[in-house]
Structure formats: C-alpha cells, structure tokens
Length: 308
Ligand code: SF4
Ligand code: SF4
Image 1 (spheres, protein in one colour):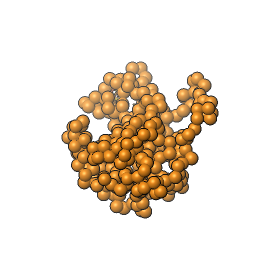
Image 2 (cartoon, rainbow, N blue to C red):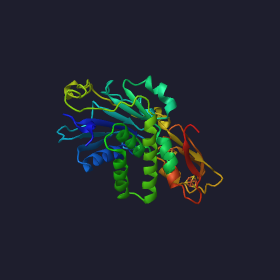
Image 3 (cartoon, rainbow, N blue to C red):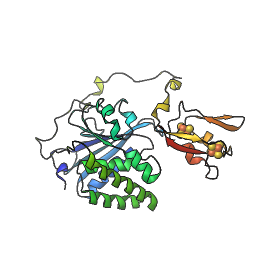
Image 4 (cartoon, rainbow, N blue to C red):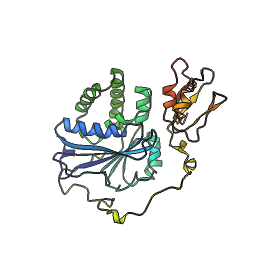
C-alpha cells in the first residue's frame, strides 16, 4: 500500500465539475481503485439542480483503515477542478487552506493566472486536450483521475492503468476504453514536467494536516437564511459563460428535423417558420446534446472548443 494512504485519518478529495464531465464517476472510480487494491474508501456525489452543464461536486475519502466519517467533504486535502471556470464559483474554494493540493484541468500557460487566484499548491493538467485527442470529445474525468492518482502516488502507475483498463472494460466499448487509457497515459507522462511535485504525505498523525476552518462543526442554527431567488429571474443568469465548447451549426446540410430544438435544455436553438434559424449562445452552456441528437446523415451541428 502506498505511504500516501497510511495515516491516522482519511485523506479527503473534493471533485468539482459540470454535469456531463464525469466528476461523480471520477470520485467513484478513485474509491473503487483504492478498495480493489486493499484500501478503504467511500465516494458520493452532491448535486444541486441536476442539469447537464450545471456545477456539481463529488467527494472521495480514502484510508488504510475503516472510515467512520460521512457526508460532504468540507475541508479537502485535495481538490480536483474539471472546469477552470469553476474556480471562482461559490463553494469551490470552501475550506481550502495552504496545505491542500489543487488539480485544475488547464494548460500550463494558465498557471500564472490561476496561481494568483488560489491559496494552495497547484497542479495543472491539460485533461481536456488529452481527452479530445484520444476520445474526440471533452471528457476530462479519467485523465484528471489519472493525474490525481499518479501525482499523489496513490497507486503505482502500471497497476493503476491495468486496473483502469479492467474496470472500464466492464462498462464501455473497447474504443472508449482505449481512448480513456490513452488520455490517462498522456497525463501520467506529462506529470513529470510539473514544477514542484510535492506529494501529499499523511504518514502518521502528526504529519496529518491540521483541522481546517471549514464548515465542519457548523450547526444548522448558525446558518444564514436562504438563499432564495425571486421568481422570473432566470433570464438574468446567463449560463453561456459556463461553456467550454460551443455548437457550430451548418445550415447547408440541416434537414430541419427539429430534434436539436426539441432537446436543447436551454431553448438556445432558434427556429423561425418551422425551420432552424440559428443558435443563440447567450444561455447555451455547451452541453453538446444538440450535436448528439442531430442525425448522422445531416451532421449539421458539431461541438468545437470555445476558444476556436
Ligand atoms: S444549443 Fe446545444 S450545446 Fe447549447 S445548450 Fe442547447 S443543446 Fe446544449
Ligand atoms: S438536429 Fe440537425 S438536422 Fe435536425 S434541425 Fe437540428 S441541426 Fe438540423
């Protein structure tokens, strides 16, 4: 068992992603990997409004002994942020101290900008690029999981990749397994280039990080009232700024079947006189449903990186 997992208390992880990014899956896969290799772990998601693209959190605790604690992780040792746009979202930095290690799905050239906004050690992993190259879509959860496991030395890399292949093979098609393994391998190789690789070590009670000033211990009587929103205000909440990828519409091949209009959860597909006219990006959060439902013979919507 890795020294990282030997300690008097569990190591806690908090995953921040958006619906559809697989943060919950990453949290659960980490727990399964630890349990399958002889450790103890637990994992659970916490959802707000369960919409594709909406911010979600998930939690993992791992240890070399039974874990008595339950509930959300409010004072994380490790935070994995699958969408850098969430760094400033409410709750992402809750309970984070300088002892924590923060993994962010972002390219190395974003380091200075991100480092200025966070209080703790930072590891940047371009998981989206790895996923796009290997899978053809922005699904950063498995490469982020690989980065966390590899950087923190939770399992030997070969053992983890072997476990991952077996585990994903139970659920997914061979090409999906191969794509995820390729993305995981890419980020594991890139870890060697990370500056200041300082693995988390909680080898005994005294080395464990001190208890945090998080929400742990907060009684319901201490909580402020709310939050609540007046009715009819959702228009002011422009979900377009959540977007990491955008739909690109080619009207020359569109057969106006209206499936994208029907399935878009944000009414962003604009139709006029029974025909698709355009996509209004004001509220489009880049969930990709329109591209998925567009018939292959038309292939009129493709998702492209937001920056392109
Ligand atoms: S336009 Fe497409 S990508 Fe944008 S919210 Fe609607 S279904 Fe999702
Ligand atoms: S799903 Fe595709 S083909 Fe159908 S209306 Fe939308 S863009 Fe056109």
